[in-house]
Length: 354
Image (cartoon, rainbow, N blue to C red; front, side):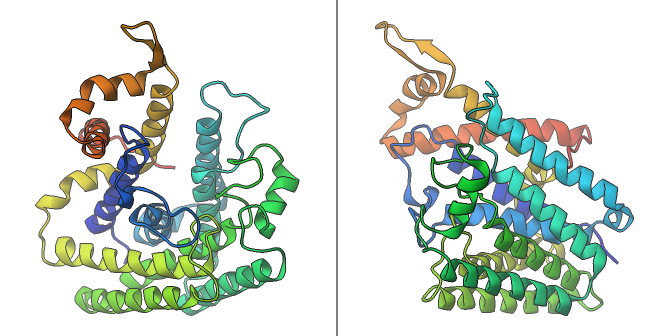
């Protein structure tokens, strides 16, 4: 029987905390390398945040009894709400129709949710879902290898995005959340569904966690091996990247379940549970505030102008020490403020779920 696991909320909260810190440094000129994205091929810890969240979307589908009662129309409503929130964030605050980015993080999450939810409604056979994942990953590999190359401008996904969305992309000629690369992201969500089905299957949880850990190791090794032929690349969401990140996510989830739900070592996880229970609200609010901070102009004492975010950093954090330490301190304070908001919502039993 499906049940809510505190470990899943904690893992989601850990992921969201990483996102807030990575997206809100005091200055982009002073960042520790784990908080940077890989320039193209390869990966850093920050490149794990997005796929971890997508993986947990799939896991969560199987762990809530409410999912069993959700109608197809409600699934569509939820997916469209997530997509619309992403479009709102992309247009905020000017909503210029000529520069409005169409793809985006929430847009991809919404599409992954829609696909995974409908597949989950159709079948709960782990073998069938695994076959779908294999078909998506192999098919994506063959398409990218057959048409174009693996450069930002030359890959077939970028060409499709330019054809369909023109100037509404993150970069003039490509977008990391494009249409074609959403296909393997759906596979990431489906690997989360398989994980959730495994966790809710009959049997002792300790045994399931051990096998989940072993599966995570196997997927991680497979992803690294595939990297030789199909490089690990977040921007293209390559098939090797799917296996690597799903494997690492499975291992982290296994560790969280062991500590929180089996050993009941929970004190450390409470702040992350609070963040994880309102992940969508946290993403939207932190994104909008971050955007406003770099848009609001401020006049300095010498008459020059800067933006509010820079003024806060220069006067409130730069004195703390080396630029990277000061920049990280700013991000941690920003996270603490977001935690305050999530804690306020949590204490009042307010959960903004898409």
